[in-house]
Length: 473
Ligand SMILES: Cc1cc2nc3c(=O)[nH]c(=O)nc-3n(C[C@H](O)[C@H](O)[C@H](O)COP(=O)(O)OP(=O)(O)OC[C@H]3O[C@@H](n4cnc5c(N)ncnc54)[C@H](O)[C@@H]3O)c2cc1C
Image (cartoon, rainbow, N blue to C red; front, side, top):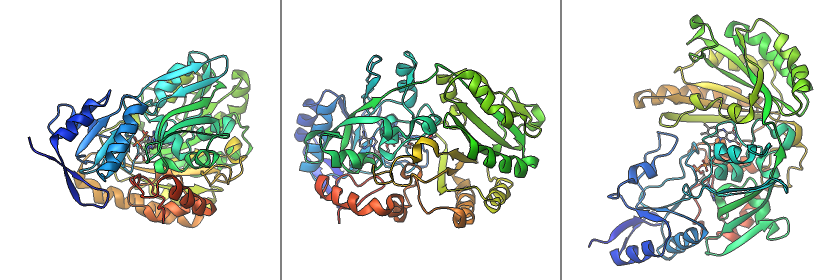
């Protein structure tokens, strides 16, 4: 039988004898797929349809032992390595051409201890899976706003969502992690064990090892919360956004209000003549007492002449999936992101100008409200550096056809450039595209050298390079 040709770490090729591949496959609980295996195309498909890469081998790990064997196999054969959690990352580093894709997607266990308020979570778990298990006990980890996102990649980059102003970033609830290093060692990272590694994996992405289990502190949440959307006509955008900015500055930690500007989807609570026209959506969640939430949201709901106001008690898990229909997998995506300390008049006018020229009905501008507990942690306490951000903007370019790539990408880049004078220069690594290598150092600011030193210690050959890469040199 023919040898398996694979891409090496230095970009060359190597031929692995069939019997070596077979012995490796037999050593695993999970499966090995090559280009001829059934399920290969499914296994290499990720959220962003712009990424179409063909790994030489996909290892579908069933547990930490498989991960250890896979990284050892990769090291012994000098292979290019991609680590795949749930495959949601915009940059598409979860797959590679020709190398080994170590997939953790099948590792989906969540164990909750409701009494101790702890959860042990494997890296193939989605936010929806996690919420489902923890909400059975009225508990939650602060994670992101799209339920199909992977907990693994989200946590390693920092992680934030509706609960973050109250309970901090996802990493602020991380108690420990099991990590398989590129040397094949299984180590724990926590405040007491390997604290340097624990510091690095809280924001430093997948640079230092492969996490096979996350231990989280849980917080009481819901299971019903006050949440929903207020939709304003785009003609009022200037006044609405200025009011929002002042309202957000006074909001209690329990309250998070994000802005979405886009063409209105055909939602049943919107009049038909609004569908397909630009709107300003204020999406809000109050993580606390329902009556207090109603009180806190009253002024925002009373402002202006909204087209719709659907704020009401909701199951927390339902609101966690509220944006899923707008963020489905399988279309082409390109993102650009900035951190802001404030939303100045000029910035708001710039954003409004660009939203007036959306290149596709699926393109949108998201502004996440940060602050609260997220910026009460010292910037050097974890690798996630830019705790000062009060708002994080994400320009979501989304469209169906490759023929629209240049137009849609061009719009995202132009908007990004126009907004740059108002931004801090910091950026959230999980919102960066593959081509933004030069922004990695900016993402880590004054912590960058410490991360380089950590990389030298845990991955001196830079085997884990398909990520927002911190180079060991
Ligand atoms: C629609 C959408 C909405 C989002 N919303 C939010 C949000 O609200 N808040 C937020 O914080 N982020 C959000 N994100 C960003 C999200 O945090 C990242 O995309 C994250 O990387 C997804 O993790 P994953 O495991 O699914 O990704 P993957 O693509 O599988 O992994 C991304 C990278 O992380 C590394 N990695 C993943 N798992 C491991 C592991 N166990 N060990 C070592 N390395 C690993 C690898 O380098 C891999 O290339 C969103 C993304 C999308 C697409």
